[in-house]
Image (cartoon, rainbow, N blue to C red; front, side):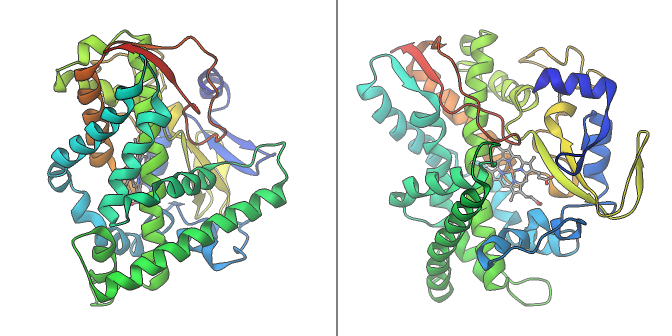
Length: 385
Ligand code: HEM
């Protein structure tokens, strides 16, 4: 998409896409301004002129989470899980994340003949295991989670039967909801030291608790938001490190590794776009966006904006400063950023500790079908033990 972004930044930085019925915004400053101004640019899809009420309860759940609520409700919903995701709390998880990574690598490297698939063998299983454990969900359920979260982020490709696609999405949302509902009810009775318990027992400012739907939505959000995204951060990092020949440079050097991962978030942002709804008529560049219009905010394009970054189209592993928008910006800045960063760091420090000469295999890569998530379906690599 990067060449297209560049053209759009130059020729049509803010434009109306009649086929999608929404605006697109491509430049860094405009993207950042929109994310910064949550009064004018709401995350709540219900405020869009073309909003259609979801037909069932399951689908509506995610709409009641922090991701799709504006302040003040946003702040209350986020407040419930803010503590456990702070950098300091997340740092405590490092030994356990190393353990899980080692388990995965033991398994993979044991019978790998110098070949593995970064996505399926490593970058997918780790975040699922970590978030499942944090939530308090048994690890046996993780294959189920993969299927669920994969389905939920898929966009309807042009050639699919929309009816069948919608039906599948609904079905998955319901299954997931039923599963979490059981856990929620159980934790209400017997709270433990896990996120589901935090979600159901934490009191809001007025002494109330999250409603059943809000608790459920929050569980599903944490699961979905953290999996595919982190998988693609790791996968995209392998591609970047391979192309820029950085594996040896980041091996054993946590500082270099951390900086390089930030550059991956800029250069190959796992989340390419977010949406907003204008709450009033507002001018951005030469365009007037109408109240109730939907806006696609292209983080992935802002992150390549040559107006903001020198050598924007080059992967610069030691780029500093690096004010990328890969985790968003402002009120909805990614809650899971410290966790995602830690997972990525641990994956590479453990992997590179055990293998040498990592090379992306010379095969055709298939991009993910989603236009909002950037990554590939699988990434075969070769290495020496
Ligand atoms: C929000 C990206 C990992 C949970 C966001 C947003 C972005 C993002 C761009 C902003 C959404 C908006 O402005 O509308 C990413 C990327 C990740 C990642 C690139 C991995 C590399 C995670 C993880 C978790 C998580 C591991 C949790 C386990 C959330 C939540 C929000 C969010 C709950 C909503 C925050 C709010 O609305 O206040 N993420 N994310 N993310 N992310 Fe992440």
